[in-house]
Length: 348
Image 1 (cartoon, helix red, strand yellow):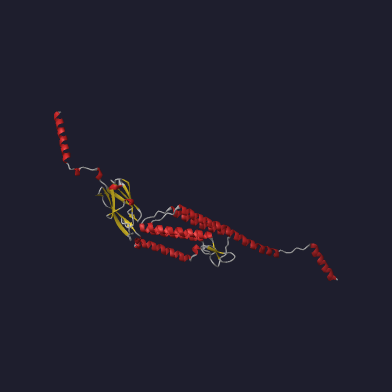
Image 2 (cartoon, one colour):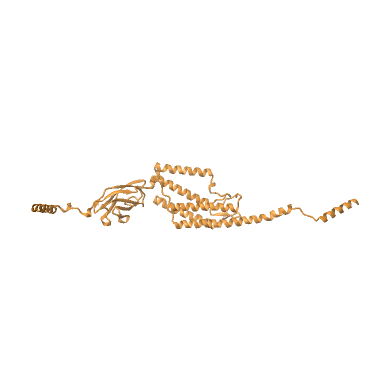
């Protein structure tokens, strides 16, 4: 029993001596724990997108972590340590420098430094507008434009005309959004090589423009089932005066067209700057709906009054024709007396 205790005590003394002789650099330190990058998504991004770096051992303290892209350190305001396993990096144009956009495609390498210890390297690709010159992007866009031009030539401009030959503002609005959304979808799908998620604002705007076009056609058909063709077509923001024959600017048409152009320009600018389908704010959608409702509201009473005035002008002529066709009735006594008198005169 005493021998066992002596051997265990001797072993403990040996372990303590070995630990005392071990240098401090060989001791494990929690501050230099193992860290590595296990994945990165998405692998194809544009300037301004958020890149998610997944891994292990990322400390939450920002002063212990550095992020490098292409060997250049990223400022703290451009990345965020979400958890020990995830870091969000907001990509600047041109990588870490943020001075210029890439002309086409460019690969970037990212490294996470923790307590001056680097991790493994991860690769992602930045996309620029220069990729439109590549055949895989240029050919689908060219096919789309050829089909669009052929459709417009076959119709001869009748896609945007009403039954009377006037320019239909509601059809023009619907055509603008259909062409813009379809072209941007084909363009971005060719660039990113994937299906693009459609934004809710696109659906709402297409619904508003389609409902406006259908409502305008129903109102026009109800008020004048057989409208005459006009020799001169109305303009986008003006109509022909019914009596003077001159163009008259309509404020409700100008309002609808003005907000359409504003939303169109803002949408195009965001599309070019982000290379993604931009969503349309709800306030602008409400404003577009109010403008379309005002357009239909002004269209309905004006058509009704014009139809009533034309029908009232035709009523006296129709009644006169009926009066002239109606035979004049004479009293029976007068006609018989006249005939008997005439016969007596003949006998005399």
